[in-house]
Image (cartoon, rainbow, N blue to C red; front, top):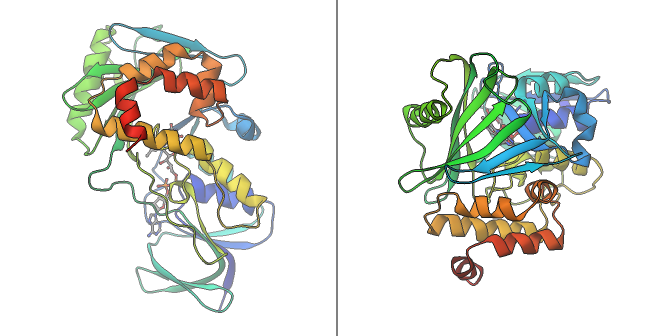
Length: 360
Ligand SMILES: Cc1cc2nc3c(=O)[nH]c(=O)nc-3n(C[C@H](O)[C@H](O)[C@H](O)COP(=O)(O)OP(=O)(O)OC[C@H]3O[C@@H](n4cnc5c(N)ncnc54)[C@H](O)[C@@H]3O)c2cc1C
């Protein structure tokens, strides 16, 4: 009976990070289970360049030092000098995380259960096969929950006529007025004629892809972009509720990624946080690390409840952006804001509704 050093359940960004960051320089035998189609998965992960992400600078595909937040009436432009907005594609992250010294065996199988035996675990897959490992890194997560908000989106990668986009500035949020949902367009201009244009919604249920496509086309028309070639699409759901599993009573079971609480639910940003989580686990003797500080979590909770109970068309986000400069805004998004910035954020929120959420 072979006992692997560790088993990774799910080869999304967090499972891959475990292979690279925790075991990449070792000669251990690791087993990974993935029941999805990660071979064909590709999408872009955005984040601001915090200190813990600097070691991945050479796999960053593009950096922007300026971004816009607004709607048809208002436009706020932020700029930063040393913490730009960056993207890494899933394909690049996967390639980087699989270039390691350790021996990784990948099984395209669904894990249905694992149980503790003496000082290791038995893992059972859907085809009733059994595997054994000393440690388990589990990234399976719940993305939707009845009655809870989710961030759902659909985007297209397009090629357009030359010199259409300002490739130095991204559109982080362009809010449009829709019935009963918060909607914005996100544009990553990779070059003067190539971009990812995404329609994002905060609501309790997802829509058919035609809904997002219609919003994207409307936005492109507004920008006088009528003709384009579609190269790829991406879509996703990110929980806007605290979806993490309780920490395991077994010290050798690690909940990672969104399952381990890496997602900042008010924004849906998770990629750089799940990397931070794995980096922190590397230097910890515990099986759980706090990625988001207590106060940040509290503010997130209040903000999400506010979004759930109020019809918001983006005004709070625009007001918040206009009250902060680029450095303050990115520090807030990356969970690194100081007290003064936090006070500015609180000041930007609609007072009455916000106080109601605080005392709920
Ligand atoms: C399209 C998209 C774009 C995003 N963009 C950004 C962004 O710009 N910035 C940002 O910070 N965050 C972004 N996110 C949010 C977040 O970073 C991602 O959701 C990220 O993929 C979370 O990584 P994870 O490893 O926690 O989970 P996942 O990526 O969900 O990985 C879990 C893996 O486990 C597999 N699995 C599940 N159950 C089993 C099982 N029983 N057996 C075996 N395998 C199983 C799944 O197939 C999956 O591959 C985005 C998410 C999506 C979907």
